[in-house]
Image (cartoon, rainbow, N blue to C red; front, side, top):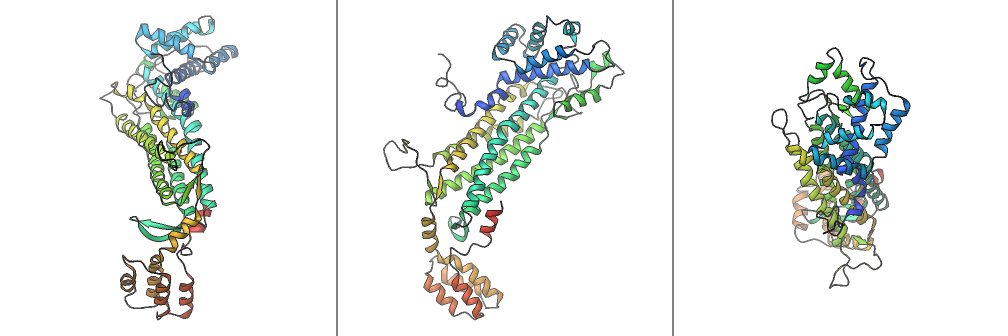
Length: 455
């Protein structure tokens, strides 16, 4: 069977292939190869620029440009050639080293120092640095922009609906009113904090040889400051240097990033469920799309499918992210290979996260508040004013304020007239009675409007 989006095993490369395309250059095997080429050539160039390493003279501008072009123009056809070599060697990184020597065989400058390609490196020096570069690219160019769009839309809703009073529901029961905009602001604020955690995670890399001690490096050049050189090299790639490792970089920073992503995903999942409920309650209507069908048998349906799709993908993303976070920092003694196949699924976790962000944004973009429904719910819930009334009674020393309001309202609701009659009989200043009598469920929203507009 020929491969196509319809025959793909994973929905990321099948049904949803057009929505996750931005991640392919980052996390595909092609993307990993491209970054390996970048790291190998950057290491060779760094060696050539070290005056202490006389055996590796500096490259000409033309050679340096040719090496840069191998990275910038690296193609799927190039990747296929590396895979063909791997078919013979059964080693992916060594295949890439041989490919580089073949591609640069015409360049005398490189060929004179060809054995310094992959000099003193273990495969993990190349791989861990490549993985960190892949994550940096995916985080900065794909994940954060998608998250920012969701936060931006939530801010719009927060500002537009800042003054749209809404009945809260704690434990699913009528509670002190808020505004629909303030609830959107709450989500935006949580996601902004989560975004900061994602950005703050440093992406670490190491370049210290087979078991992290520069053994091979020092055997060839015992007087060279290899640790300082490796630090400068890693930092020149925009990564943070890890000086203490076994054969592998221990992936703790990766785990921190995945934990931070999972936290943001959990916040968004919570939001999707709440907004789903607001749609169900009629607080939000969804804009209609021409030609769209909500149900194969019920023509009237306008289902909140975008929030449901986001919820499902957030769950999948977090299941993978948490496995990555739990698994990757574990390696038997100085190295085992159990992380290798797991690392190849980084893009799957990012893919489901990106799908969820896309779905959530589409859902948020369809929302329109039904202020009439909001007002109707509030008008039917005068009992929520029991809270401010008993609080004012406490201020003026009225005996048993909570108990009196509990007897009046708990589990049975109350009408406007009955509540106002209760207020008129209170032994409190007339000005306070006037203020309480003017209060309605729709005006009892505290600082909600201000808070919503401030996000």
